[in-house]
Amino acid sequence: MLGVGFGLARYTQQLVKHLLEIDLENQYVLFFRNDNIKEFEAGSNKNVKIVIADIPWYSWAEQTRFKKIIKKEKLDLMHFPHWNVPINYNDPFVVTVHDLIMYHYPRPEATTLGPLKFWVKDKLHRIVLNHAVKKAKHILVTSEFTKQDIHDTLKVSNDKMSTIYQAPFAQKHTTFGLNTKTQKHTTDFGITKPYVLYVGAAYPHKNLGGLLKAWEIFEKEYGDKYQLVLVGKEDYFYNKLKQVSKLASNQVGDKNVIFTDFVEDYKLVELYKNASLYVFPSKYEGFGLPPLEAQQYGVPVVSSNESCLPEILGDSALYFDPNNPEQMADMIYKALDDENVRGELKQNARENLQRFSWEKLAREALEIYKMVI
Image (cartoon, rainbow, N blue to C red; front, side, top):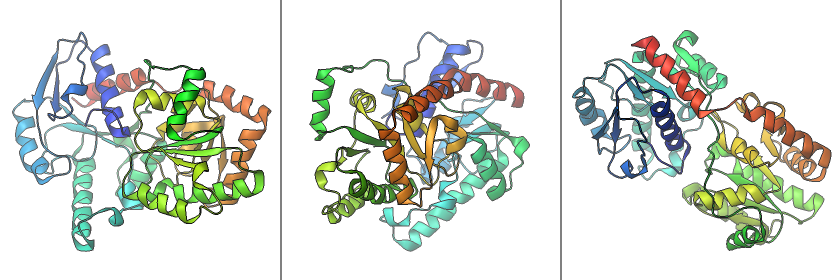
C-alpha cells in the first residue's frame, strides 16, 4: 500500500522509509505490487528484500494467495499497515488500525455492487478486521480516540494497543515559493481571491455538505471577499457535492466554490502556502493529517471538535460543532478577521507540531517489533 495520494499510502511510505534509516540490524522483506514499486527508494540500507505480491487490495486473492507468498519468506514478524490481513494467516504479526470508519459511516451509496452484495462485502470486511485484531500480537493505533473506539466497539484490551502518532508529510522539493509566480499559478484553478482551503476526500463523514451550508451562511453574513477551495480526487461523493453546489449557486456562486480535483504535490504545497485559512469539518477521523500539513505552512486552522481532532490539534485550532453550520461560519470569520487570534493560532501550531515525527513513529514501531518477537 506504499505510495502517495492518500493517507494510508503516505503512512506506509514514511514508516518504511524511516525504519530503513534507523534500523541497520534487522532484515526487512517488503511486499509490493507492480504498480507501486516505483514509489520505493531503498536508500543505503542493504538489509532489504523486495518481493512482488501483485494482488489487489481487499480481494479474494489477497485472502488466499497472499498468505502463501508471505509464508515462503519465513518471517519472524509481519507488519500489516492496514486491517486487510489474510484471515487464515496466524503467524506472528502486528497490525495498524487507523480507524473504525466501516462501523460508524458505511458507504453503500458509493458502490456499484447493489445493496445485498454491499451488505455481504461489509460483513466480510468486518470478519477480516475482527480476525486481525484478535490474532495480532499487538495493535498500533493512530490516536487515543481510535484506541478507545476499538476497545468499545471490538472489545480489545487497551493493553494490546499502542498509540503511535503520525506526522504531517513535508514536501521538501517544490517548484514555486511564496512569490508572484506562485500567486499566478494558483489562478490555474480559478482562484482569484483570498481563499479558505480544504484538502481531502468528500465521504459523508468528512461533512463537506455541512461546510457548503456554512459557506452559504458566511457569504450572507460577511460578504464574498473569499473563495472556498476544495482539493480532492473526483469521485462519486465529489460529483454529488458539485451538484449540491450548483443547486445552491444563487446563494454561493460557482466562482466562489472551487473544486480542483486531484492536485500534484508541488501544486498542493502552493495551495497550502497561499491559503488564508484551513477548514476541517469532519465528523470522524482516526488521526487527521491535513490540518497539521496546513499548519506546517503557517496557515491557521479551524476544525470540528469531534473524534480525535481536539487530541491531535490541541489549542492550535479554533473549534466548532460540525453539526452547527452557523457556528462553523462564525469560526471561519473569526479566524480570518481577528489578527490576534490568527497570530495565537500560528504560534500554538508551531509548538503543537513538535509532538509529531515520522522518525519517532518508526522508533516506537521498532520497539513494538522487538517486544513481540
